[in-house]
Length: 253
Image: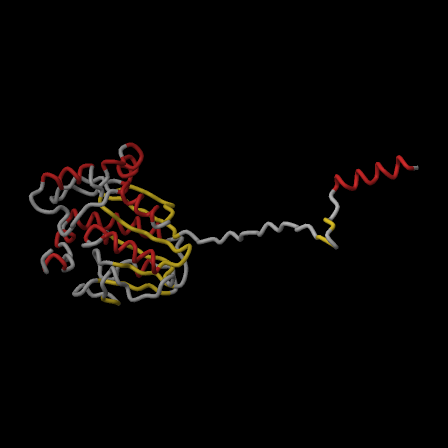
């Protein structure tokens, strides 16, 4: 891998287009709904996508921090595979297409698992590999959407999360616009709901929300065994011996 390949992907200029803005608006709506029930002390957004403020205005935690790559701004600049946070210290993490643009998405997800507290939340956005946008991606000579290194299917991502013991609580596919940059008018909410219900595989994106499982310890109760006591070479009488002694006394009487 060349040195240029290790650099973070630049923010795509197409997000300023009509199609990009429509996508961002839809994603902000999805994130706002997903974060509505996420509370706690500290939330992280890892990776910039769209507005430099990120999801900070939506966070309902006590604190919210944006962690961006070099040159992208944010509160903290860091390598996403080596986050400057202690293990089990973060209540919620948001990944807005971060795995789609990361050089090592597996390592990023493992690092997120490390910093999340037990019962912590993970909310992520990703592009689907198939559907209408997937066909456009296969037919395009360049990356589509721009700056996306790889497209991680939601089915594959489920397997990754299971290996890390992340329990998926929400999985929703959304955004059913054609992947055409020219202005086509805004899609209606009715059409979006229709797509989610009847042809979700044609969606451009998906949202997943997962919770880090709480590690529980099951105490092992020792099974005590009573050892027979031996007094002056005579073993402790058993039930069988007691019955025989009782029969002898009864016959003598």
